[in-house]
Length: 225
Image 1: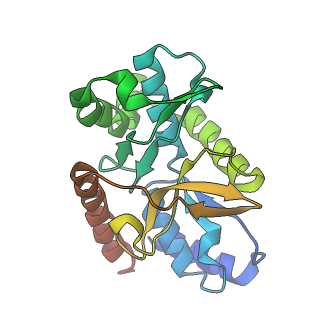
Image 2: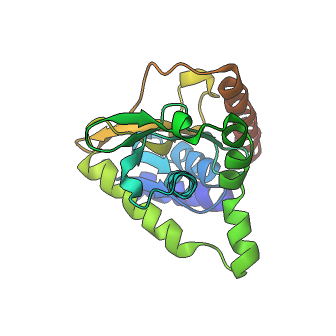
């Protein structure tokens, strides 16, 4: 908390007002919020945290499950919330796009128990499993995800496609307000916009509440500095 408080003051004093910021170091969401709070003259929309790594892991798990090698055809999954074990990988709106048709992935998987249990846990715990196996973090995967995040933010997302970015919350979809929260977003002209109008199941609402609660607790701890 103190580190990012100090860094935020440097941003406030020296950074270009149009700076684009991506925080990767954990706890990424709350580190990003601390940075934002200490650079009040910079647009809050310029501060983001990395959940693209989780998004990419989610897509990779779906590709493995469906035996799809070209994972570019799998799109519109969502990582909600915190870059932690409470994050919610959500595929109710994810589709397989073969160029002619968009087929709902939930139907292709045809295993709701796997979707709501094993799949979610695998994505949530992937980072810890990699550290356990390698005795090192997944630095290369994180670097690749950071490149994906910035490329889409600056160059824009493909038409009809959204990605996951942790951005400042105004309470969209029942998320905790005034935290950095991962949402489905589209990007255009160097700006991001949260996807609107998605209907959520009771299960999804509960999962979003859980990760919101954790982010609220982190915010209270961090801003105590």
